[in-house]
Image 1 (cartoon, helix red, strand yellow):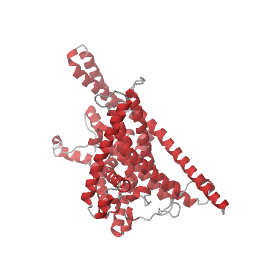
Image 2 (cartoon, one colour; image 1 turned 45 degrees about the vertical axis):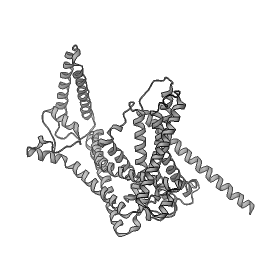
Image 3 (tube, rainbow, N blue to C red; image 1 turned 60 degrees about the horizontal axis):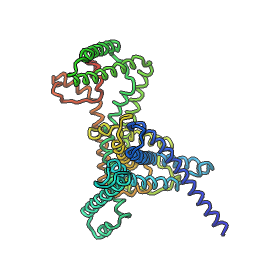
Length: 492
């Protein structure tokens, strides 16, 4: 018996060590990738080692940690789905014994814990530490800035706790809830993270439909469009003439010092024209398969992914109306590798994972396309640390809400594990149903507006109402410039 007890303890010890090593290796990979991404966009500074450089480096490390946790939150659900299917297909394989339910649950709990830590501690600390200068009258240095940062964090924590206390007391004021108000760890933090998750879900609801329609424009700018009824040589000739005219104007006004503002405007216009000429030359040099096959194929993939997403949401709405157990809160907690949650097995699991990543990319594109958040758009080698902190917080909120949104919309039937499945609002039928309805309706309207913009433009021109600016179509602003340069417009 003693030998058996020792063997069981040794197995548990080795299993825990193995899980810790796997978690560390996964986090190390995510941290290295996140560091490369941030340093690619961070504004380059001099190599002089001073106080501000140390503060920027500490803030950089905190932002990298936050972005790595965001990547882990994105990969949670796909990794769990793939692990479940692998364990079902190869239940007794020796080489995948490390892939078990304990590891999956541990990853979910770690991501939930560190998401709270980054959102409520590390990112506010990085921002306050970056903006701090030390209290008036105190000796300048890192120590005074750290002291000011901790004081600001303490005051911010008191403010947030007070807001949560008042909000929870107003929403539910029975005796049990009033007693739970004094429990910080068991009530405050889960309730606060539930509110943040709801805000992240609403932010995804606002960004994803916009991003799904915006993805067609973004891919149209990255790929080479087919040249149908277009004379690229004529357009390039007109662009070259405009470039030569602007160059002559710049040479003529270079000697005048009082036209500095107009020269800057001419330089910007010249850069814009040169970019147009480079794009036209790229379209001219592109091969036939790239112009005639790649662009329609990518557009067809985007349209298929968007259509499948809307159809899955519509089916989930029917499930919610028929069976209340379709709620994310009402899902049973199945073990990893016991049963498949996909009707068509591995194929459906792969489709679900592709749709999750597609929704994530669309939400990020939609986030930076919104006018409110355009100031957070990162620029290569020219992004301040304050902007990077804002981007990391935004991406953390979006990525933490992605598993919840995927389960709420019915993209997947995989249960939410850890603290992700204990959000209070997931069990509210009206909130979940309204979320699905809004997503389906708003996404459909955005797509209809996207694909009917050219027809609306032509109808307004035919009625003579095009000068009233009744229709705004930001889908392809460069096509209008090129058509004006060509002397006539060639659209649908």
